[in-house]
Image (cartoon, rainbow, N blue to C red; front, side, top):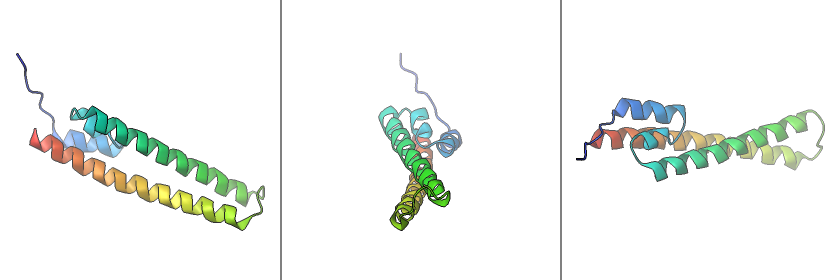
Length: 100
């Protein structure tokens, strides 16, 4: 006999707030959740690499101004993307849990 598992919208939203995709995994959307986790992880990696490149420019190890411009742009784009993906993840997890 199949028993329906209930999910709580607040729990799903908090899990997605802690890390993008965890709320979807909690709701039983494994593929969607793992995709969001992977995309968020790659974006965070891009942000860390950009921060390291910015730091190396400030320490005088790289002398090209384009290096700083691309590093700052990459950092900002990654941060904005993670934020937008986070907002989507929270609302989607909450909405999906509310329907169950």
